Length: 133
Image 1 (cartoon, rainbow, N blue to C red):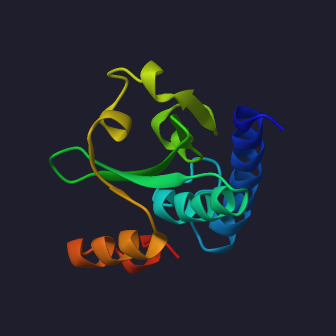
Image 2 (image 1 turned 180 degrees about the vertical axis):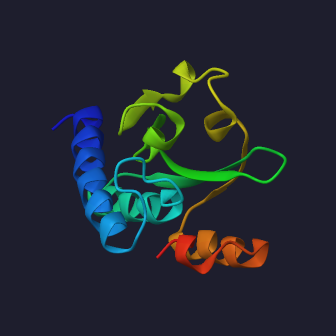
């Protein structure tokens, strides 16, 4: 399977997983608002298991909002983009990302492990239920 097709398949399957998990835990399963770190962490793990090289991207609006998504093989993969009015799953080449929103362009850090992301979230005081698992 070609890399882009593999990424899309994994992203769509992870989105379905995230909707079920979010619903069980009291998050909005349609937008997945406030579920970005947890969804991105699961997507990260699945992409790694598939032999790809993902990184967790941490974007910050400079005020109070943060967003986590995945970058992998020069693609942006966001399974919680619906919270910003985008389709449920967004997979785009990183060269195609423009000033659509701070949540993709204002990346302040990237992580090579879920544990590194978790430590940063804890240090920054993220709500416990939103910290990557």
